[in-house]
Image (cartoon, rainbow, N blue to C red):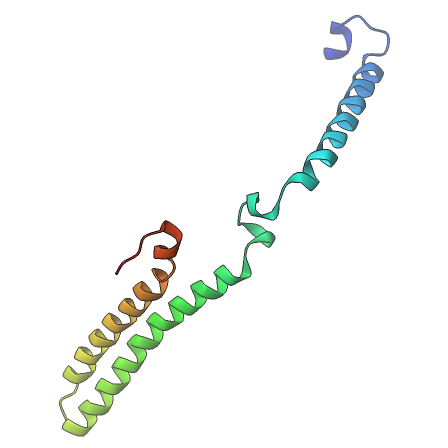
Length: 121
């Protein structure tokens, strides 16, 4: 239906030529714009994401998990020594979780004062 709507002899050839010209013009515009874009304006997603952000996230999650595991381990050892299973493990796991959360909060908020220009003295 689109072939006979314009009444041209070869509408596909005309559309293809116009599309090729537009595509070439767009390519030229992108070639001029792409070098001007800095890496800071690109979004941090996909393969161009900052690897140090991934490392920081992994470190924060590891600190939280290690805090719980160390607390539970200390509690388990105290329970075996004092024969109070499961109370020491429960209490020390909660203390380890609290310490892990505090470490994560401290590490995640470490660079915020310098970014906002505030001085927390």
